[in-house]
Length: 124
Image (tube, rainbow, N blue to C red):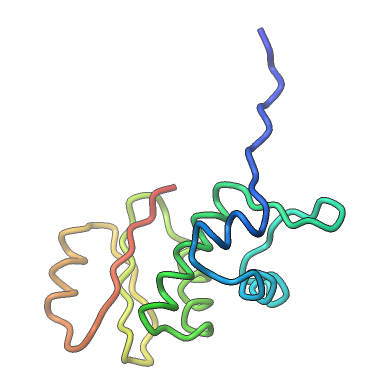
């Protein structure tokens, strides 16, 4: 019986940039601003599965027109969420995001909102 943990697969910056549709400079900038924190291996940045998901989410939100400041706020807010929670974010409102424990309730609230909203479900 092997009790040692399997190493988490990691990908390099250029692989993630291609997969997420972002530039190498964007990934470097997000690392410098501490938005995404890859593991440093000598001179290479290595991204594990959670960082890959985070980069893809950031890239999608940026393509939808959210500023990096808005994305950072969302990520910070989602850090306190539990699996199954749904986040409702009003893109044109200064109000903070709202967290729902019930997906149906979140959908109802989204339908009641005026203007664009983003719904995100926490999976892990």
